[in-house]
Length: 137
Image (cartoon, rainbow, N blue to C red; front, side):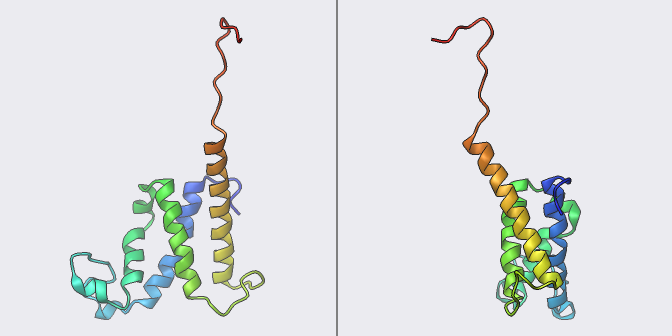
């Protein structure tokens, strides 16, 4: 799914599903902030939908996500995986073809690939070639 596209764009695209789940769960009619988390409001911290509202606030559409670093998006996607898993406890995720299980497999695959690439870059830093006029001992 992700071979030819850049990692950051794939990360951003994956946030659409947890955002949809969050919006579906919140009772917007009862929320004084219309589903957006206000950290200054004590009611938000105690609300049943605090987690979902923080997701909506974090995401707030692709424009805000595009300004976040790949590291921030990766960390957030790890939390998104946990968020989605908490809502899907009765499936055999390796074999199930429902949208949630498919999303979880895609998200985990991208996270695994991104971490592997990141690990490879940090453990194998590029070596400097010796200048042509220097001799090695």
